[in-house]
Length: 81
Image 1: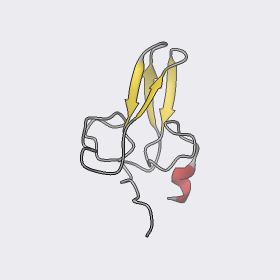
Image 2: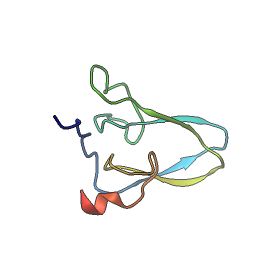
Image 3: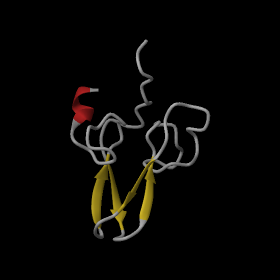
Image 4: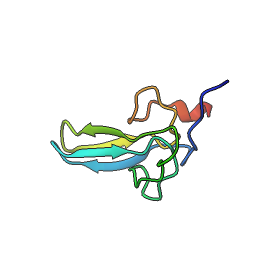
């Protein structure tokens, strides 16, 4: 039996402005209406949001395909999804 696969929200990263010290919850299931962040759409499913704290204030590129090996950040995996 294979593991469930998240929905691809978009084939490319989301450019977002992060603030140093702020806590964020990245959507891992791909169902959130507030991509790339969690809105609770995962409830009842196998996926949970990825919590992270921004190390610095910057533009970050968060994974949109939900298959990155460096979650929540884009690592280019979307080119093969």
